Amino acid sequence: MPIHPELVAAARWLPRHVTNRVTLRPQRVLTRMAQAFTRRGPEPVAVTVSASLTLFWPAGEPPKAGPPLPALLWIHGGGFVAGSVRQDLARCADMAAATGALVAAVTYRKAPEHPYPAALHDCLAALRALRVMPGVDPERVAVAGASAGGGLAAALALRVRDVGDPPLAAQLLLYPMLDDRTGKHADERHFRLWEHRSNAFAWKVYLGDADPSAAVPARAASLERLPPTWIGVGTNDLFLAESRNYAARLRASGVPCELAEVHGAWHAFDGFVPMAAVSQRFAAEHHGFARRALAVKA
Image (cartoon, rainbow, N blue to C red; front, side, top):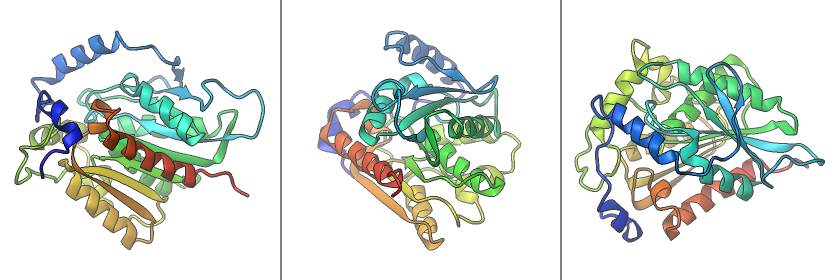
């Protein structure tokens, strides 16, 4: 489908393919250099030796009094191999202000140095730490993430269900990386940043020797008893079909699921053109879903 008019200018300079075995190291170096010029944001709080949480309070700082707040664990993207909390500082601050929830962004280990289940273990440890944090309502905790972070959020929701942890209030999956079986799309001309070659490489190094049926959300035998779900994805995104399939399986399993498709949008469009009206509408949709899912109980 043609690229959305508000995203055409950015699409002219963004590549279709970024991440592979050759480019990963320089990509990480360039990312660190670029983030050195961004604002620092809140200081992370260690959870384990390998995981930490960066906290974004709705009013910018912890409340001195009042009822406990809902909380949302945010998992950044990067194909399981790159990325950091710092790329989402503005996103997390905006989400906290818009939803009234404490947004806690987790730092987790990356492949290929740390394949599955390292990242998932870090996210589970961070979620458990978030639940018992002072000022947090443990019954109103959701998980959310973008791209690989969306895939980790989906995997985390499955793990929470399977190990018997308290149920989540919701999961928000932004253009999530859900299925290692996704191959080359028939037409990738309008894709940006992520296509079949990046996807195949990332899944290979993330999974390592793991059993995909245990590690990949789309391969889960059952999606029953998962929390209410919001999935958002562009129609020029490699993950469109797997997002549609996951939404259909959730609904067939009795899980309320909203699927928002952004016509003409490529992967992670809102992170690169955040002020475009199409990106603002996308944010308003998942912020609204989060507010409803985390609403104060009567």
